[in-house]
Length: 354
Image 1 (cartoon, rainbow, N blue to C red):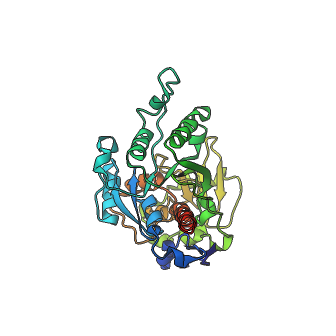
Image 2 (cartoon, rainbow, N blue to C red; image 1 turned 90 degrees about the vertical axis):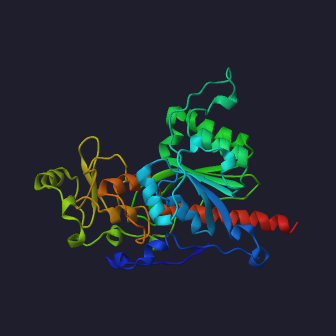
Image 3 (cartoon, rainbow, N blue to C red; image 1 turned 60 degrees about the horizontal axis):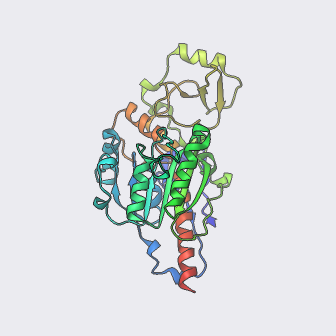
């Protein structure tokens, strides 16, 4: 796989809007590409469940996908989604029948993870996921039978209830007839200065030869300096009081050359890094600070998730903080999307030539 190299320095990135559109600039080389001139995967359909502000959609649109249905219950997230994609997502997926969803090729969803009630053999395997939002994904996969799916969730899903929750999810997906692949991917490995680990689950009806994307070389990764705005352009309300700033400096474990980001751990220690820890929707206002002096701007938070600078901000700061924290690292999804489509094309070619 060849990737185009983008090398930036200083604030060059903030002046080149196209930089964030390339993330990651993956170009798949497929042998015998002439055989795939009329491949269905040159233009495929997907649905975007638990859509948030559309980070997963951006990733799969970059791989020639077209969204035919989206669902998001949060009104503010739906407002941002509509402003950027020109359509209002349908509401609560639990109230939408499978028959009301158009035909599609790939199901996508960053589903919330509520506790699973493991009823056990006495009640039957089919009851294990009822009452959870994963059940809605399972229902739609069973009713619509798309050729593939991609699900995203927090890393701790694999450890929830001593691994029982994740085991139920994987068993149910396989029971539907899908070949299932999963791996924890970190946004730091795919071009972003944010340590954000998420479990990605991919499934295919056919015996597709799929591998998760390898990490990008360092030369293709954005630095923290690349994503920061000039201080004089940042809303003055984001600068913290001198008392807070001084307290952070006094507790900081080490000194780094600027710019850096610090966050306060449960023990009260302040650790600087040349990357951000994972953005969190419900974190305190000063969870992360740039140079111990200010909170990240709305645009910087979106950049830390790999959203292009053309992405419209239509909600207050508190809203975009929540939305960015709940969203996905777009470059990770882009990388996975391109690998999925490459694998599906490869399977199509192998079976066409038989």
